[in-house]
Length: 333
Ligand SMILES: Cc1cc2nc3c(=O)[nH]c(=O)nc-3n(C[C@H](O)[C@H](O)[C@H](O)COP(=O)(O)O)c2cc1C
Image 1 (tube, protein in one colour):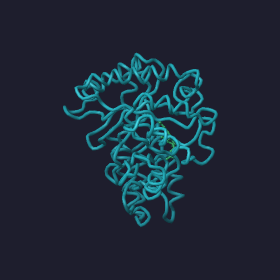
Image 2 (cartoon, helix red, strand yellow):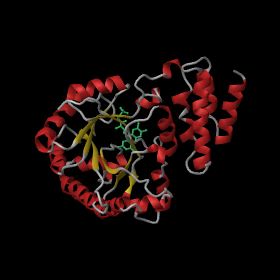
Image 3 (spheres, protein in one colour):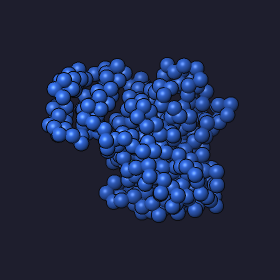
Image 4 (cartoon, protein in one colour):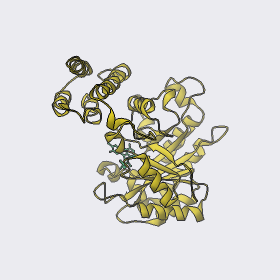
């Protein structure tokens, strides 16, 4: 299959792609699709729900948005998907009528030790957990059917657990998912070797014979839209997901990114907007300020004195302090 234009997607990144960062990216150069950070469905169905809900918060500008979840119990996936499909979750999040998630994605690829030891995320790739993985997919699908037009279901996963394992992708494709995102590494490889796009291409071939309607999205090491387009064409992909590429170019989803030519003032202004929006949205109590400080690496670079400014910003202990430092720097320009 050849495609004119692949879907460009901002990857889910925990403690990065919250509503604030997504709003900033919606205003710089918007991708075709956003994902939330991953959220634990078992936690959502526990007294800890209130604490997790902020990870699902969004505004109308971040649409279309896919809610990404992980967990262990199929019944909790069912409940979550039902609450997405009937609009009750969007209502609980305070969204106006008519604004809802565009679908649900199941995280079956996160390699973190704690998740894997718990039998979740990338552990679901292992053959011994296949029945559970399929039960999770079916329960989610059933929950999503609560909407008059069933919402799409997708999975984000890797090439295998210890080794490349196409039996996994065949099993996933047999479930007729709406979309399947492949990060071109195994769990064992973590992020230590380059993503293997030719193996992602093999999944495309499996899709062609097993489930032609499933969109295949490739992910791993894409740093520009042009590179993404080339890969999509070479391997017949429907979509390209970009994660860390956004750290070196907040306009990575633009056809022609202006970032390289942007001035010190413009870069400082963009970070200031991020910090202000963060302050309005979360205040200082939601997450440690270090989660916000570290974004300075995205914006504060490529000009004289950037390193020194980053060092000061990284040491700030409140949003107010960050804003004051940015303001002083602006004044001294
Ligand atoms: C800080 C960080 C947090 C991440 N959190 C998630 C997550 O919540 N869900 C998920 O599916 N993948 C997560 N990932 C993986 C990315 O979505 C993506 O698959 C990976 O970074 C490879 O793509 P890239 O090379 O374009 O960054 C995370 C990656 C990073 C760097």
